[in-house]
Length: 436
Ligand code: SAH
Ligand code: SF4
Ligand code: F3S
Image (cartoon, rainbow, N blue to C red; front, top):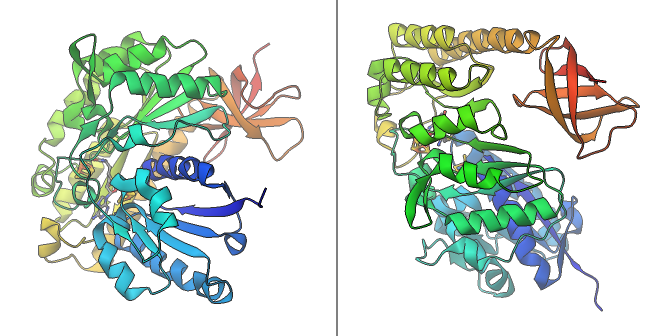
């Protein structure tokens, strides 16, 4: 038998890309590829890219520059660009970067093996009619106790700043049966926690027993799988928080008390300009309903600062909303104009205004994050061990609220789900001891 060929994948961007990278590695396994962490020893290098902000694109071109010596030393090495930049700029990448051998958009990953075999610098950025996931091989990689599972792809929302509807196409959901089958397969491979993924995961809808069901019902169906102990989902749009999903937070103990619900801004003017299709007040009422269903739920969000036209008053309204909600954490980004989006036509704010706003918002969020971590001290929670800690006798995992926890547990093993009491909080993690 010949030596296996080596595949190196670098993943940029969101969890959906992490999931896609796993599936691409699994799709290349029957072709004789094993994955490597070392780009220099690879026979095939895939850069699975993100187009969400300008910086993401700059990273791709600097990483391609870094691969030049490898390609010069071993011209037979193939270099592929996949993901959202591949979708958005496929032909341009080929023109600008002669070292790139193939470009494969997110809807064409099932054709990756054939494209990697083919010569002639193929670019495949079609949005095919066939169901990509059904044509990819079944899950096969070695697994830890947690896994991602994409159930929904694409976006029809067209927020004025965002490229995702263009790079991932229209909203589409995978059938319930397929999701359940994949989840069962993951659990058989040792997975105890599954995070359901979608660019708009709570827009999920599928058929079950002849009826159209939403994400809440899908979660209830998944919860029946024995050995699956924890379910999470991300990312959600406020307008798609349906009643069945809120009810699942109340009724389903396997659904973790954590929700990432991006709001982007607390100003009605900005929300309108962003085409988010709800007001700040709608979001706050929604949070009230979610908290009524699951009082200990931890909320996180994404924010964009410096969106075109954002005034001091708009920004104050965002800080005000953050104070009202009280988040466990949040991602915040400086607005980045993206080619082809409506907001990119509008004049940008001065950089120093955006910088100052980002700084103020992050300070407020950090205060809230510290408060949320501090409030856990003395409380009981469960932790799913993901890896040994740096100290001897220590295990590291996530709490129900997705907080990182270091547990002093001599006999702990990866994959154990353990009741612990939180003993201390630091600025971004917790310490705990098992409850005896
Ligand atoms: N589907 C999700 C997240 C999509 S992208 C949602 O609707 O919220 C993740 C985050 O990137 C977004 O929530 C937004 O905060 C940020 N983002 C998207 N486009 C951006 C842009 N042009 N500039 C800065 N941040 C952006
Ligand atoms: Fe982008 Fe808006 Fe769709 Fe989220 S909902 S992916 S921010 S267009
Ligand atoms: Fe980036 Fe595409 Fe995800 S643009 S955030 S990799 S959907």
